[in-house]
Image 1 (cartoon, helix red, strand yellow):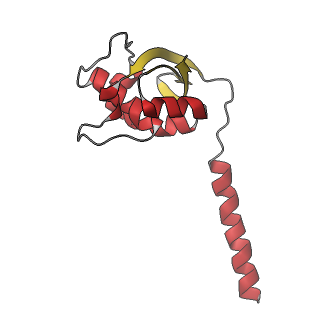
Image 2: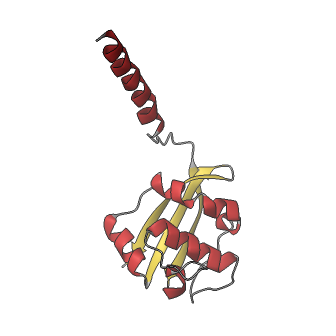
Length: 136
């Protein structure tokens, strides 16, 4: 019984720090680094292997790879300097997880043929989160 109680307490102690680490707080010292508008077209819905992408961060990342690396741009796509760096594109999933996107916006992005605005926030030149909005 003593081992059971100690195991239970140890497990509880392990969960609390993990939960605290997953909480993102915005302390106000971060600022808007950059903002751009992009059209999510059919080329953005597929990766370079031809596989259909199914979550918004993948599609937005592919849009930026198409823009910067492959020079496949939809008419009206705006450039950005932040996602010209492949390492920053790799961080997009975590940045979107720490930012905001509505369920409706996520659904529109997955369907494609929609205009989005992406606001990139961070400190210095280090991005911390993105907020994504769909233009209606």
